[in-house]
Amino acid sequence: MADKPFASNYKQMWLYIILDYYFYSMSKVTDEEILAEWDVEATREVAFRKLINKYQERLYWHIRRMVHFHEDADDVVQNTFIKVWKNLDKFKRQSKLYTWLYRIATNESLTFIQKRKRKGTVALETDEYDLGAELTADVYFEGDEIQIKLQEAIDTLPDKQKVVFNLRYYDEMKYDEMSEVLETSVGALKASYHHAVKKIEKYLTTD
Amino acid sequence: MKINNNIQKELLEIAPKLAALPKQNNFVVPSNYFAEGLPDAAIAGIIEDKLYPLKNTNPFIAPENNFEEGTAYLAVMAEIFIEPYQYLKEKNIFKIPTTYFDGLADSITEQVILDTVNNESESVLFANGTPKFSVPENYFNNLSDLIIDKVKQEDAQEIVLNPLLKQMQGEVIFNLPEGYFSNLEDRIIEQIHAPKIKSIERTEAKVVKFPFQRVMAIAAMLALFLGGAWLFQNSGLSANVSFEEQFAQLSNEDIKNYINDHESDFDGYLLADAASNELNDNLFEGVQLDDSEKDFYLNNIEDDIINEWYNENAI
Image (cartoon, rainbow over the protein chains, first blue to last red):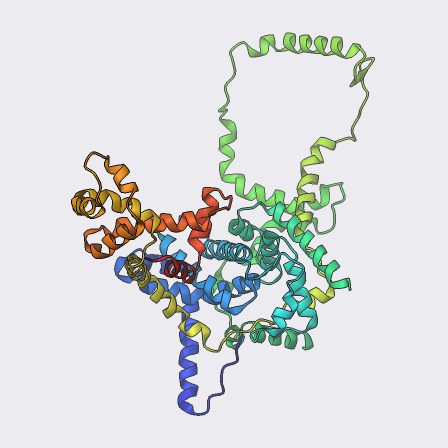
């Protein structure tokens, strides 16, 4: 994430304090409050803004780790929230809101990756594609050689296994929550993560 | 102390806002809870009172911590809680048939005889009436506990990451433009409110240029109602020939000129629909795709490709 610029004077410092408090208070908004405001037509947009504020970073990073590049992640995160806007009325509220959001974000990411492969603008399935070189050239990537190798290793996984690995390794999501996101049994997810870790370890330790 | 600094540093990198929050205990208890609430001493007193007679008369050796956590403690607690309900024991709520016990001995004897007859023959499970396979004593009594313990052990087991993977877990490698999240919300709201108008405008703009071949067929039908006589006169055709034959003899240039001169007489949406069908046919010419694959490409084709096609094929 980009660093906050240094506050050169007191006005800026107070502005940052107020903004920090605003974002802190936004993060304290509960899902129940958001959904209650959503149910009222007059406050629907306000509720939606609160939802975006609360979940944008978490969903963004989940998407970014799937699609790698900021421009692509930007497209997908916007598509995700637009889909949320269109479908929040259909959310049954039997599962947690954030697992439902993660499910949409995951599906949008996978759809985007499939579309990118079909368009042929990035030959992801061929030997010519060099993810490491692409990441090194990307201004929004700051990893060293081993981090690039890790991203390449993750990229060798099948799409769904990639999601399982990212959710567990980076987001430290519990298996029962992951099961709601991916609509897969806990046992299958544990097996998938186990295989993913083994494959990645092998990739990292092989020249 | 070293470990705490690393965790704080890691937290600062991953979630600076969270790291900046002061750590405080937000939990409260009712006032005087520890002075007047149900103290552990009161419970210990009850247990000791119940256990005193057991201490001198019980010949069995209890496991370590039995009186704090084990079965004796649980038994005493159970006795305390069940005491108000002892009277229920005296009332028998279960019913049986009236002559049940009269015939019970006979039915059991009959069952024993049947089992003996079955067991006497040589079978997979029995040899001379004796089961071939045996299980340890109390095996089935303990089996459910064994299975539950095993399941809990497997749940508790975590995949152990190698040190390198563990080390990389918290490192931040992806960056993004400054202030990205501050305007993301506005951009999304703008998209939600804006898109439909743009697509309608784009469709109307496309009507200006439309493909040639398909439009000719539609123009032919309209020409019947709007300018049939004019076409026949200019082409010098005989009245005895059918319209289809006469139309087939018309040049493309004649029809093209007629449409251009009478553009306002044609239904724009009909022409746009014909244009899209024409586009579809030409795009997939010579390519074997089913309808769902064609739909996928059509939904994802870039606008500039469509515009380029129109520019090349416009009248």
